[in-house]
Image 1 (cartoon, one colour):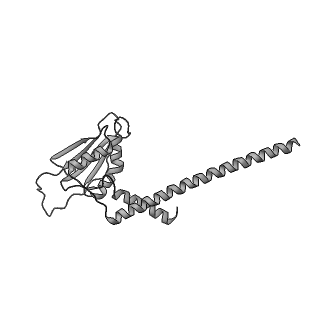
Image 2: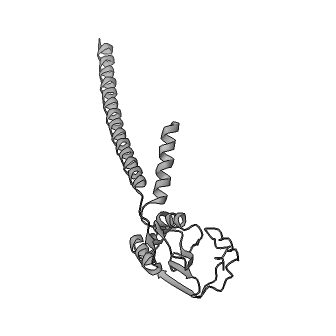
Image 3: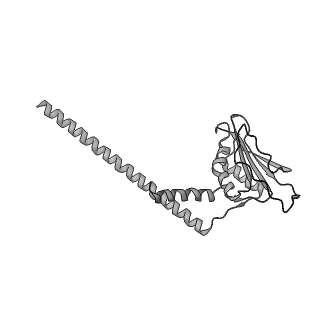
Length: 203
C-alpha cells in the first residue's frame, strides 16, 4: 500500500468517526454515559455490542468532555444496560472552578465505573434483545441530543470515499475474474501437457 492509498484509508476512517449514526451533540446536562453488557453477543447482547463499536466512538468524538465508560462481563444471561448520568438541576459549582478531568473511556471487572460527575438524575435504557438502531433512538430521545449535520465539505468527502470504494470493489472483482481465467488456462495447459506425455510414452 503506497502513501496515497494509506492517506485515503485514514481519511475514510476519520470521516466515519465524524459522520454517521451516533454523531450527535449532547446537551450540557449530560455528564456521563455508561454501558454494561456481556463480552459475547448471544443471549441478547448483540445490540449493545454494536452500540459500543459503531456509535459510541462518534458520540465521544462530538462530546469529548463527557465521560463514556463500558463494563463488559462474562455473564451472558445478565443485563445489558446503558446508563445516562445527568447534572443536578441547579449548578452549585463556582464559575471559576475548573472541571475535573473525565476518566478513562472504558472499565473492566477489576475497575468499577468511576463516580466522576456525581449526579442526582440517572436514567437507564435496557439494551438486551434490542437492535442497535432502537437503542440509539432511545438514547437520543432521552438526552434531547442534536444530530450532527455534515458540512458541504464533509458531504463531498463522503461522496469521494464512496466513489473510491466502488472503484476498489470493481478492481477487486476484475482481478478475481482475471485470476480465475488464468487458473483455467493453466489447468487446460497442464492437462494438454499431461496428455502429450502419455502419447509420447505409448509410442
